[in-house]
Image (cartoon, rainbow, N blue to C red; front, side, top):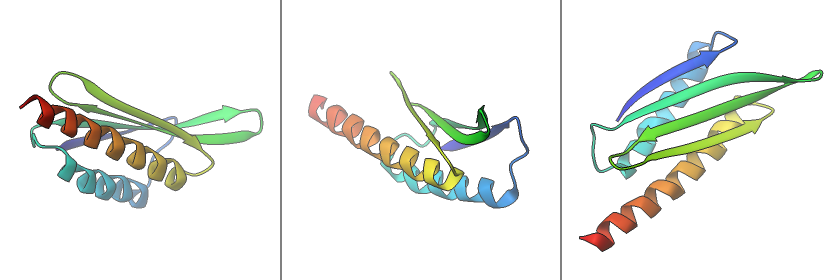
Length: 101
């Protein structure tokens, strides 16, 4: 799975990019087609005095994209939630595909 990481409204540090890449690499084992592309968007969203961190992941599977989005106080919390959501969606997609064959 090829992963593209984009940060909006800030410059992501190397540690955050490495962490996102590691999590996405682990998630790749649930994808049967290795030619799939994933796009990770990291954003800062300002609500009043508080800056929320937003992570949105789009995995382009053949037939339909899988999208997950999370907003938390830190990127680590948001990343954990997004990965858990994507794992569930990918497993569900894999089960549906196996039932058809």
